[in-house]
Image 1 (cartoon, rainbow, N blue to C red):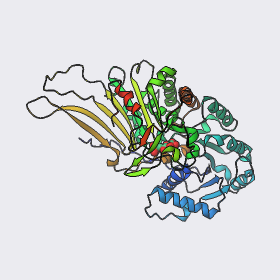
Image 2 (cartoon, rainbow, N blue to C red):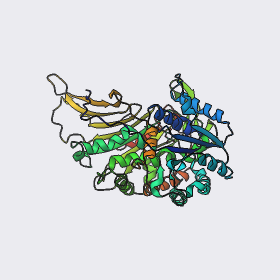
Image 3 (spheres, rainbow, N blue to C red):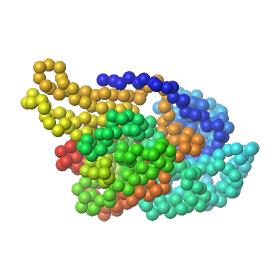
Image 4 (cartoon, rainbow, N blue to C red):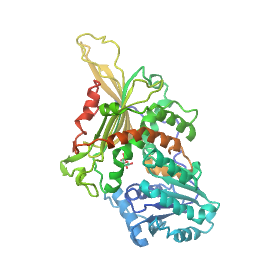
Length: 501
Ligand code: BG6
């Protein structure tokens, strides 16, 4: 059963920002830039969402000429179109300049200053620093930014910080202190690209824009919640980063915590950035610390071994480039969390994420309680619980399963699905990074994390990381192409439940 989309009013589209900007990307040749930032900037350019008067300075460790860097920009964009032929306009490529250097040595300050001061009417540009770099480089880069003369001038300046923000509560607080020496809180954009995804934003809209679900959105009607972020890719070329981060710091501390908050939070006083962020922080605060005993029963860490993905043999994690051959880094996590507040007491939030799993699948499943009575006699097979599924990837859709009577003399229940699929909408929606870049340029902080939220998320994760550090794992404990360690399946089965997929 498909739901038709009726438009009540024509959406305005995404406003074009009129303010010119200079974007300075640290890590301009890195994985994130190549996969996300450069293609996103190009798409925004094509959609006419970027002010023509905008420029990008990329900074990276590797020496490259301007032409070589522009070639890299081109290739990154072509790759994002999966090899499809794209003719990339010179007027786009000409926006890019490249500077190589070692941020530890602060040698490039003059060069960056010179670059910025070359702009006529420099004060009309906002300067956006983008740290597309691992957390351990942040301090040096901030030192470099602090020494730039431009910070004393009257520019609008902003900084975008990639996740993970710090590596634990303490380092996140220190990093923030460093940041605050240069930037005010409203100039700091702590990015979590999950918040830019259309279906993720729709969670709040769906909950608070419909009166039929919110009365049921609590412990009286909801049995449990499942949140899955499964990937079939491995760690690709990110061994150095991943060895330090692992699944806990790469995905759980940020993306998964944000999804829990959006599902669980109370309605905000209004839709302004701080009101939404206030409610999210309350949820993080309601997630209680877990004892070692609880963690050993209810949390699972895994690491992939060899296996098959789409019929192809793939290497195990320990054989990946830049990974220790006896590494204990987790590439899979599943666990049962509790949001201990009035609305959610007793409702488990099962969370699962990992690399080299069976398929790419990101979804949130709200499983409602089954009806209190079996009214339909012996002819009735067990009713299935109603499930509301927010599919985030690979398809962006929302579906609700309901039980119908199968036509005939008997009372056989027949589950059907009501579906709404975003791909059916005849409209262009921005990808997560595109959306967040536009928000940052416009100065809208709603979809970015605030420092207190970051620290609360670390407060939940620190004991989990510490607990797993004490364990002597026998890794690998799941094959590439599976759904993770057997214990992850048992985590739900011992509660008489199972993962939807
Ligand atoms: C990033 C992680 O934040 O999210 C990556 O660092 C992961 O390891 C990626 O692959 C997943 O994002 P998406 O949008 O593909 O689910």
